Image 1 (cartoon, one colour):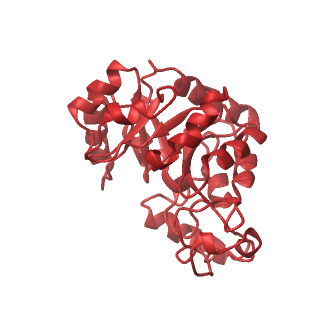
Image 2: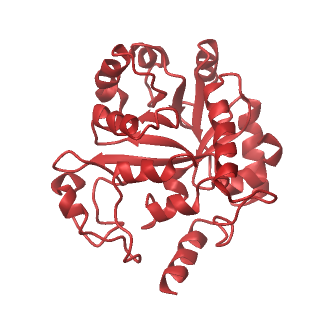
Length: 293
């Protein structure tokens, strides 16, 4: 009962109805076949540069708070519920990739200190606040749980690109993941090493404010298929430059207080030929723009 109450509180804090996240979409089954069908539709759009279908990735697996980026969150918000799930990866002191947004464990667990100060064994002793049965998952655990259910955006924060990619490859999810380079100027060398070795990687660098789009793209052995831009870099020149290169923009969807407000925001972005988003309000964005799906 305590867990259910806490879950409801977390959902309400995100502006999400408690029943909306776990329930399947109207008229859909909850079988693996239904999940696979939805995943294949998303995958087809991700790989098709001309796809204009609305795609929304749920930021932190759809939650913001202690429950974010947990296996519980993945299970609540995968399959037919959302198109993609986004989460961050950091490495422990002994070089093991784990799934956590912050560079410290303080906010979401009963522990303290930087992730880098902990071994994996020490991380495994921690528990998620309010969820005695949940702990920080390893990247491998998340990949295994997501297999065949939902497309992933893996944000490489303080972790080796090589380590993260090797985990993805070993789990057989190379065609179910977009690798997001949060700090591309510090990460492009590892990525280029993989590309030069013939690895077929869907990757997405972030374009930071006051940075040249051309310079960003030129960092890589081959151009990315997506570039993450934010409100500061969402300019006519940036969008035109991406369009010329047939690279798609990925944008954090601005927060809205009502469905009508989200619909207005979404229509303005769709009119700019932006169709791929990260959002803390994924389900509400779907509700606001059903005809774009």
